Amino acid sequence: MKFDYANPYTSTRIPVFARNVVSTSHPLAAQAGLRILQQGGNAVDAAVATAAVMTLVEPVSNGLGSDAFCILWDGEKLHGLNASGCAPAAWSPGYFRGKYGADAKTPPMRGMDSVTVPGAVGSWVALSERFGKLPFGDLMAPAIEIAERGYLMPPVVQQKWAAATPILQSQPGFAQSFLPWGRAPEVGELFRFPAAARALKAIAATRGEAFYGGEIAEALEKFSTANGGSLKASDLAGWKPEWVEPVGQDYRGHRLHEIPPNGQGIAALIALGILEHFDIGALAVDSVRSQHLQIEAMKLAFADVYRYVAEPSSMEVTPLQMLDGAYLASRAKLIDLNKARDFKAGNPVKGGTIYLTAADENGMMVSFIQSNYMGFGSGCVEPGFGISLQNRGHGFSLADGSPNQVAPGKRPFHTIIPAFLTKDGAPVMSFGVMGGNMQPQGHMQTLVRMLDYGQNPQAACDAPRWRFNAGLEINVESAMDPATVQGLTDLGHQVDVINDSYQDFGAGQFIWRAGDPAVEGYVAASDARRDGLAAGF
Image 1 (cartoon, helix red, strand yellow):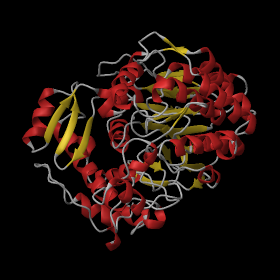
Image 2 (cartoon, rainbow, N blue to C red):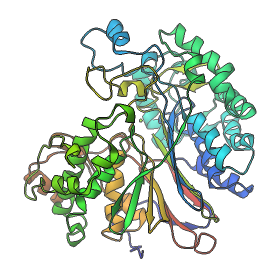
Image 3 (tube, rainbow, N blue to C red):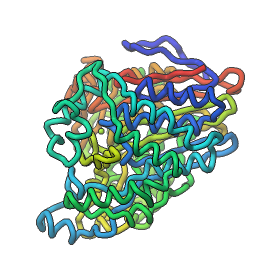
Image 4 (cartoon, rainbow, N blue to C red):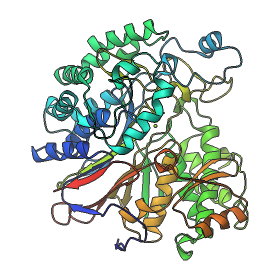
């Protein structure tokens, strides 16, 4: 595909062209991945090393107690990895109603009763064992060094760190780990995390066994018990990541691939399947009509996703039913080109995250995402090993009859989703956009810009975004043309213009294969909404 490399949007970034490349939301992490590639590692090795560093340099978004997902091209085919953790054995609707009242609708947002089994470390081990070239311990070395020596605090991470402090400073272990001077670090201030270095050394030495069946697992159980939680070492020992077959949807001669449920990636597939029924490329790229069509398609997708997506064994319908061509055509007919609508779920039976991507000159491409869910996750940090624990348990429902109702050993509805694009069975792009339910929306918006309008990955990344919330409510970035904002308002969208791009509109990383990786290499982009970097050689 031939891109237009003129960028019509204000940007601090330019596309990066290289045969070996890593793109993520912190420069030190991207450079750690390059270091591994230069040592003879492949893209999987680079991704694992980058992910480990990200737990340190962007702890607001992920940590050693996070979950992860991955889609990778090994040179011949796609593979998917679901490393989302499950509920502790003690969890049930009765467990939470007994502690939080009969009217409780979900597990709590923070604290130990929001913590599910962390899967990120298990994903690193699984990827390394199956596809890596270098010893696993070598992949942890950059992160261990950074944890011990420290790093200077970047602007965007510092802003979110400071904002989270009043909310989380009373959670167990948080102040000890993340407020070393009784406050959040300032921009340019050195932050060290020796407890995490200790954990990373144990993880490196045991290839993760210390985390799921050794001293770290025992420390997590002790910490959980002391702070009113029910997570046990046996819960960690009984968990394993799952290799899965990605699900896909054709769009404009390409095919978008996502991890199947329990994640929300299918929302992007549904939205694109609906947009296939419109000639959106005939509309101006930033026009009211183009944005309206995309918003309405996304709303239809979320109506079904929020109704049906859960742990696959609990779903009433299958992903294939949700992506059925005739069903998506019927959903497309519900869009009114002249009016915003509040859609309900159809009936398919009739028919606070970090993202990174790495690619090497041998053609391996990795799309990887890990997250603690909301900023700093549960807020709970096991202090001996610096394990900052996610709050994915808050994603469960307590409602009887809900496919996402909490149960022992069950995985919750998940928001984090890596993505991968192919054409005629060959790899084209590994990419992702962070940020809660912004993720499938970001996948769709950036792909439409690239495939329908020929915008290059950096321009598609820099373009102003919108975000659907609920009903008729959408947020738009303040950089969006006021005339477009007014036009959407005139169609009935309830528009809120937002200045905080990090919080509401996510951040993307993109690696597009330009041709033979050993010759032409790749085109990479990194989102200016965070402190990130696309780097290569």
